[in-house]
Length: 336
Image (cartoon, rainbow, N blue to C red; front, side):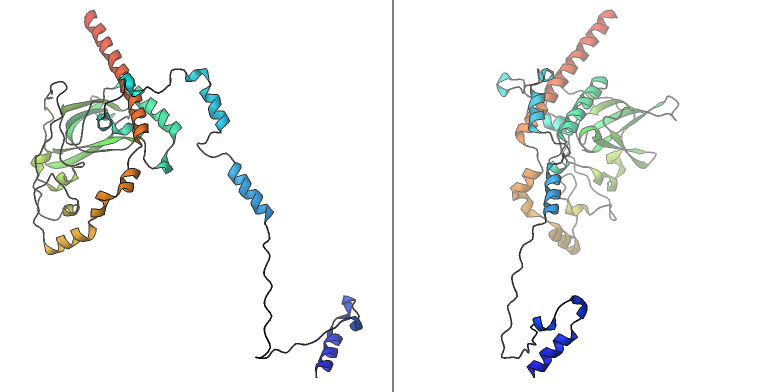
């Protein structure tokens, strides 16, 4: 049976291949359950040299915000770098520790994915130049402030707004703060960009802090807690006096609220009457482990050495600006 089948396979081969049937040994293999199967040969790894070259070219191409070590050494040896050495702490010219709370917008983003040291350096320079033109005083969330901005539609081309600071955030030139006040029985909130050229003046009428970092819950509180007269006179604190903390606790209005304030662990509101549903929601959204998560705190803060160098640079430049401002005021007094 096998021989006729082999002869049939030879006869069926196409003659255009130029093969002679007598030189071809063709046989048919019949598999059964008893015959062992042939093991497949292991595949050899084929190196894709074209892909390798592409990967190498991608790795060697110029990256964003990256300088070669030779270029870095060249810049360090440049005469333009004279006078940029870091100031040691022993010289006593470093910034105080609480300075990071006075000007938090100078600190960079702790997430390295969004870091750009060249851009950060340029932004700090522009921010300090802006501070040389306009006086941006120390303030915190809870301070009563007055801001004057340019308004082309106002009769005097300027607009002045007085309110309580309910939020402060942003980094670099994108730093902002939000003021809230009640005008004609309606709550009004205005967000100002701190380094916007349209801002003419920023004045702190009453410097104080609150128990919370944000005061958005004043939206659901009685209007008396957000009402301030536009004729409020500034209250000056003694020099080197600590910033007072306002421990007033606000009683919220009945529901509905803008947010579920019971889940935010707020210290500046009176205790809320909790229902069983509200307690279940608090337990579901509670994160007690974040208090002990050291890596989370590390990722949310800037390195201490980098923070110290940045704040020292800002402190020195700001001190120089203050000195020039005082000397110019003394010259103007003499002329008068």
